[in-house]
Length: 171
Image (cartoon, rainbow, N blue to C red):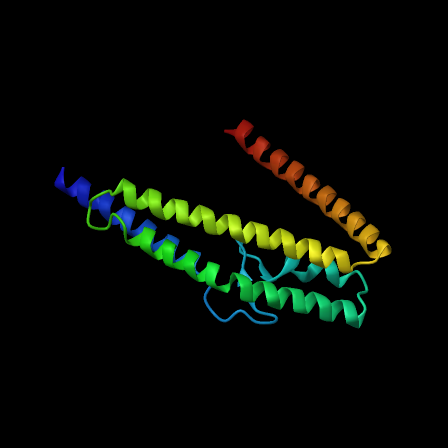
């Protein structure tokens, strides 16, 4: 029984450490900074990875406005992101002594939810500001690109379903 408890505790500590390690963004947040997404692919930080706007033939003035909006947003959210990292660290440390403090977890979870809410609001505000800069033609092109991306995503999902569906029937 004691060995089972130690094994479970070791797994929990390892999992908590992994959450902390993978949850941190690491590095400086600057122009062109790259990080791994949850799928392991590299992308640039920013609005839709910056990929969508690259194909809209933005004017230099629009590019500068987009850059200014992004920089202002990063400054606004800097403290929120730091608080989020601190909460993740605290959550990772909870329970490592073998006890569960539900009140502490609930408090940290509520703080995390509030920060997430504020980040979502800021992200939507930035998106609206960036879309306001676009011309009607650029908005139409962006809508078309989004539809194409959705179609490709749907095709990939169908391929995955077919591939995994076949694997299940073979077993």
